Length: 130
Image (cartoon, rainbow, N blue to C red; front, side, top):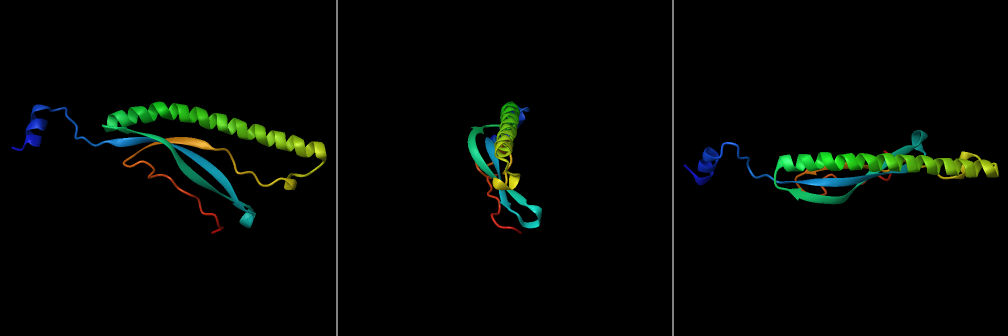
């Protein structure tokens, strides 16, 4: 019997050591262009991460941080809507239509993920129409 087998025999509730990272991502939309009625993309940026020794620890932290990420996303959505209202009022005061300002991108949102290596979910959206 190997030492590992002996350990798992003696410690029946032991879990294999397999760490993971809890990562906070910021997802930022962008307006791509006017083709086909307009199209948008999204970039995902790693903001912060923490290594956890067990899957259970990582999941507990992901849930806890997820609540905060949801609050940040709600706040970002509200701020985006308020900015759109300010821009609409600015256009109305000057008698301009909405084509005077560039197309809006959309609100930023936040997500919390578990991953084996930090940054594995980072992405940059395509910058040309496909």
